Structures are given as structure tokens and as C-alpha cells.
Image 1 (tube, rainbow, N blue to C red):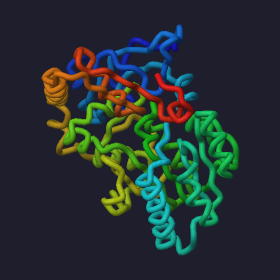
Image 2 (image 1 turned 30 degrees about the vertical axis):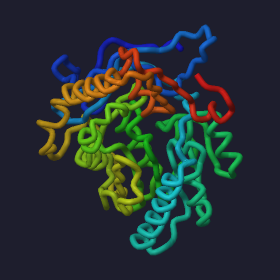
Image 3 (image 1 turned 60 degrees about the vertical axis):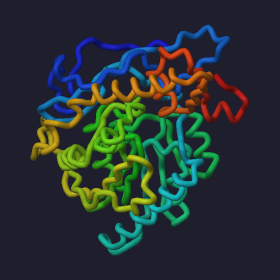
Length: 353
């Protein structure tokens, strides 16, 4: 797959030019996590370094690469709704939002939109409560799976073109999981979400929590596809600038939260601000966050490598989807580790790579 790239790199938030000292982590020769190639294929695998930076002006940790991944994203078929934990979380999120909406507005919510709904399982919980639902999903296969389940889904990226037709306006609730932190224009994403909501209506955003990623040394989450790495303060400031006020952080029982998820529930209070983004308050953790991440990750990889090399037998590393793939890519030098990568959907059909 050919990935186009422009040379000059700028912060996706404050638009300042990124300099060498802004980079905090580099993972070398990393593939796209959903671009599986069979052994007998003549296709060239896409491999490139993932450089992650933190820009001081806005404090948002991000992958600044301006590679054009739109063709790849349209075929990106990852979803996790088959897991019981995920289904429980989605059900709890639906119940929580519907209850809170009624407390605030004195009536039941009747309409819900979701950018990146995957196969539509989360929207189905809202539909079962009588809501009109619509998903905006770039992958054609997932759109078909969602539509076959009775969930109204349009194919496309979530951007300003989404609101060109009137049926995309005036929703009660917006909800999205692991999509906001994968978009190349996060402020544009939030502006569109704001315009699609009625005043005083709600949006819930599930993203990976940067503080938890750092605490757990989860280098497997640094991917070409993963654009922003956000903590509670970063998301709150971006929401504020976009006319969305935080109502609650992690409103769902912690036992139901997925891994390192951070859930923000926000209410539309104003139209988005115009002009260059500037946080109202600096993050008190900003000066230390991610400064030693490269050292921490390299140390972790070295320890895993040493453990593998001490084994007399051959070990097999199984990687399915993003985390498994990215974990194994940084263990490329060991001779005692045989890597097996399987796309979950293809493996179910007997096709592995």
C-alpha cells in the first residue's frame, strides 16, 4: 500500500511547527496494524518509524505524521464488540447516558449519533430503547454489518461534510469510542459533534488515558493509526474550546471500564471558539509527562528480549489486531521467538498471515 506524506510537520492542535526536541518516543519499523499480507502475496508491507511528540504550547501528546491514510482507513475493519466485557461496557454506557439525559432535560432522549460505530453494537442498545440512531463509519464491510443488524449507518469519515444534509442535525446524544483519539483533526471532529447536538445535549467520548498508558508502559498503543494520546486535562481543554463542558469523568462503574479507558461525559453549552487553540489552564503534569517514555519503553523491550533469549526452547508470540501486533514488532531481533500474526476476522475464516 502506498502512503503519501508531506514533509513539514505541525502540531494538530495549535499548528506550531514541531521541532526535534519535541519528540519523546520512537518505535522503529512499525507496520499498519490492520494491513495483513499473506506469505504468497506480492504486496509490499508498509513499515515506518512511529515518532511521538509533545508540543509545549498545547501539551497534547501526538503522532504528528501527516501521512494520508484515508485509503487504508476505508478498509480498516477492527472492532471488539464480540467480547463480553465490551458488550457490558456498551450497555452500561447506554444506560448511564439515557438516565443522565432525562435528569438534565426532563424527558427521554430520542436521537443518537456515533462516529466510528464499527458493527453498530453500541448503537443497537440505544435503538432498543426507542432512539433514532445513525452511525458514520468509513469501512464498507462494517457499514454492511451494521446495516444488516438494522442500524442506520452511512459510509464516510466524520468531518464537516457529515453535516451537509439536514438529517445530521439536532441530536440529543453523541457517543464515540476509540475514534476521537484516532482522528487527524481533533478540533474539527469536536466542532462537527457540537453542531450536530442541540443546546444542553450530551456527548460521551471514550479514549485511551495517557496517564494509564504511561503507568503501564503500554507501547503497544503507539501506532500509525493512533494520532492523539490524551489525559483527563487535555480532553477537558479541547472540549471547552469546542463549546462542550465536562459533566463527569468516568461516570461508569470502574469494574466495567475497558482497560485504560477514559470516559468523558460533556454537555453542549456554546458554539465552538474560533481562532488558534490555547488551553485556559496548563496541565500541572505537563512538564514531566512522557519526558522519559523512550527510556522506559526501551528498558521494557530489553527486559522482554532478555527473557526470551534465556529460554532454551522456541517461543511463539501470538498477535491479533493492534496490541499483539505492536508488541511483537519491537521484538524483531530475537532468534528464539517465532511470531504469528492473525487477523481476528480472517482467522475465523481460516485465513492467517
